[in-house]
Image (tube, rainbow, N blue to C red; front, side, top):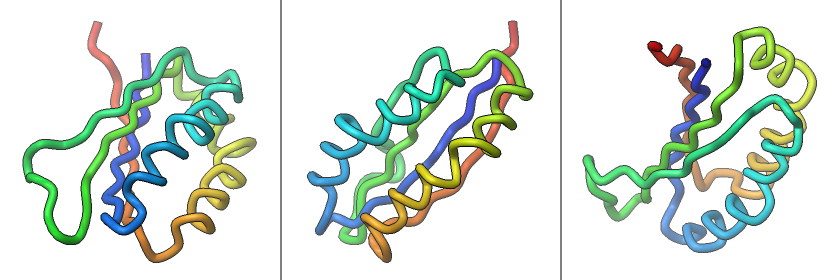
Length: 102
């Protein structure tokens, strides 16, 4: 099982809108691609939120690296573009990939 983690620090000025949009639109759109089996959205507590923003980790689980690569090739560019255009200049993000040890 592969864990695709997206860490986002979102500016406080758009925080509430971003959380609502992520829950109602973006995460469901990612899940509707069919490449992931489940997701989690978590707010980081350490380091604590500051004046600049609040940090979240959104985790998506997929069966294997092939599925993740297909997602990156086929779906991610449009979904990331939509997010970037909506919150331009109001976030920083980085992505990591991990393998769950079984």
